[in-house]
Image (cartoon, rainbow, N blue to C red; front, side):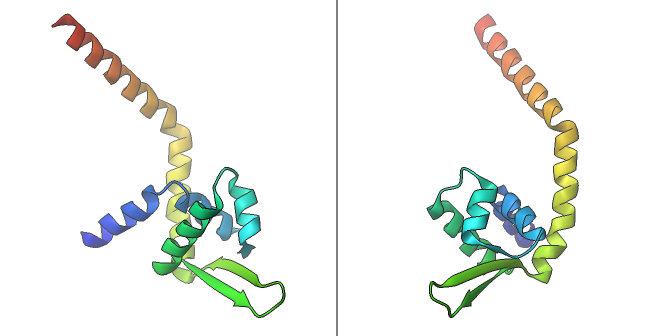
Length: 117
């Protein structure tokens, strides 16, 4: 079960899934990823890239050029995660509104119950 907890923890990060999807379309430089993700700070992007690299989902390649060039790509392990993530994203697109409605209804009924006491 420790493995499942690790995967859930990794995927719960706001930027992990968007990064994996961006890299599923090909090798990218840091600046490209920042532009594609929109809204991610440089610090958070770097931190997330390091974390998913540490867990073997992406590969970082540094080229000995001036200026230095760094590229990221999915490893075979990272590519194997893309398909299940796509399925989850499609499910979310179909049912996300239902989740929000259920949550909002429960919150409203909880407030009403507390107010009635």
